[in-house]
Image (tube, rainbow, N blue to C red; front, top):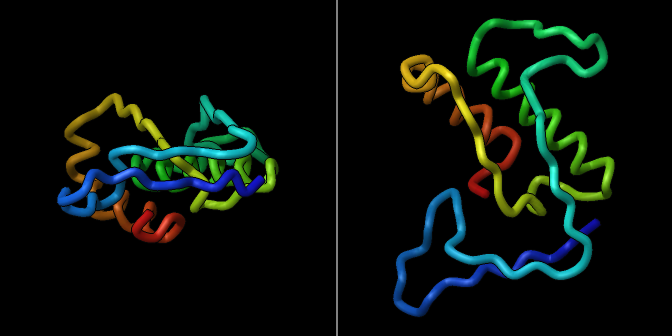
Length: 106
């Protein structure tokens, strides 16, 4: 799928961390939605832990991306919704580790 992402950064702006101010794409565009922290093979949620569900949701997103011929570096944007802000705050370190394990600094 290699869409080719061109990062757009105004001259003199500091390099962003974990996002891009602008991205120009070429080629096919895949939109992925509705991915949740479940095991797709069993249809079950193997854990009630937010960070573990986040990791599984990322795995599910990347499975769809891979099925289209893409890779983690091809992901241009991701929106994450959480229902428990305090659980998110408590899990930030584990959530960050799950992200970096799959996407690196992208």
